[in-house]
Amino acid sequence: MNRFVSKILGSRFQSTRIIKYSLDRNASFSLINHIGAQNRFTATVSKQQAFKELEKVPIEGVDKDLQKTFYDFMDDTVIVGEQNKLPRRSLLTTFLQRTKNEKEMDLALVMWARWRLLGLLPLSEKTTWVLLSRCQFLKYPDPLITVLLDRYKYKAFPTWYIFEQTAKLISARISSIVSEQGQDSDAANKYLDDLFRLFAAVPYYDLELEDWAYSFLILGCIKCGMEEGFTRVIEVATEALELSANTGVSSIDFEAATALVDEFTKRGDAENAKIYFDYIQKYNLKPSPSYHVSFDEDGKMSYQEFQPKDSDIKN
Figure 1 (cartoon, rainbow, N blue to C red):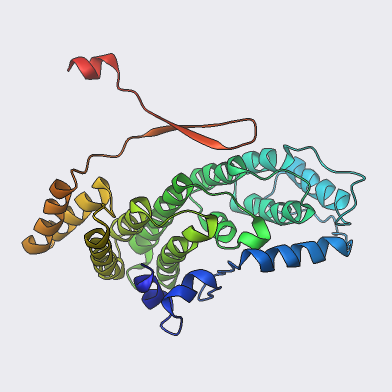
Figure 2: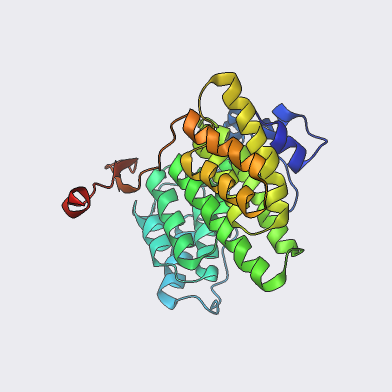
């Protein structure tokens, strides 16, 4: 199942190790096993670790009120394990919602890492979703990539929806870079690698590599506009077909299969276009619904499909 990811991200790693152990190419990929993470976390907190107090220098490009919130939080939590002055429960989420540029978002991640280390303050699916929404607003996927690929440091709670939306954001970033810098851009290639790291991260959050996972990888590679992306997507799609043949269940969704049909057709490859057209028919694939996202009091996400309007039903 992870054979292709291993091939792309480093031939020196065996297929099972690409998921189990960390991999570092152009960006951090710090996923580690649960027991090791817990032991390191416990040891850090039990030492009552003291952080160096930050010099309160003005940060250019960062809102003054946001700077004050940041410095106050870092001062209040300078001793890990001390509970004398914990911030309000909603502080991190509120801070994320107030970010308006990349510098402010970078400060938010510094806060997030300290927040996670405290271990006494809430982190939830909602926290990760708020990060996603701000990254979408800024068209800046880097904070999401950083958080999702370092479970120990940030303890994110991504869902399939967050993975899917993150892949879309990365793909759009690649497309923008390619249009400005061309196909050989190092930055574009780094983000393309990040798409595959994102896929490899899925099982570390107790999520199965199901059709949505293969689909976000396929769609991301096709829509990014890189030829290297198309080269890789051929093998990803082939692996998905093999998985379907073994399980009898679709391994890609309607949107991914349709994108493959369209891309092969555009390239004059009628044979491969037919393979995925037939795949849609065989598994009776239908367009995926859109969702409203909501949260319960514990910050857990729930999804409600959009309901068609009466006028749409009548027409």
